[in-house]
Amino acid sequence: MNTSEGLADLVAAEDVLLFVNAAITATGQREFRPGVPGAMDQRLSPDFLHTYVRVNYRRVYAASPALDINDHNAARIVLGPLESAGEAGEEERRVEGRLIAARLAVLPPPRVYRLFGAVRRARINDRRTRAIMRDRLAARPDLGHDAVKYRGGVRTAARHVHLRCPPEAEPLAEVGAFLFRPGCR
Image (tube, rainbow, N blue to C red):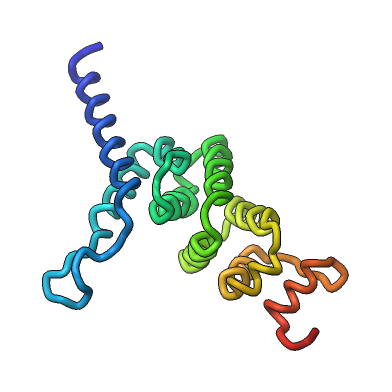
């Protein structure tokens, strides 16, 4: 191994370590009061790190939600591979989908529904994304509870994935009526 390869590996390791440390600690909060001249937004540096690591170390980036990072950064990392699905091969997308589904299973419901709203606003509407969202909705132990408590988020997600709520399919029929036809039942 020559010196340039060793140096490149060291730089890559330092890049990934910096990103993981930031993903564990950075929360996206404002450092100073908003609206005050000179107030700095803590999101600028993590935005750069997320983009840099996603572009240069995509596999590491996609696998990082398996680490004990905070929910804010986990949601951002989940959104990254969904936004840039065209940059990955078929097998890589399959692995990313499993990693995303695993992290969505442990994220709190409000964070997941905010993420689904971001997916819709970003107009990410490929088959893999819809399947991940549909599977997450199906895995909820009480979707009716979520529909009441997080009505806007569940409605946004259901509409985005074209969730079928036919009248004969309980309990989805009741959830569908509550979300899309209020007052009819």
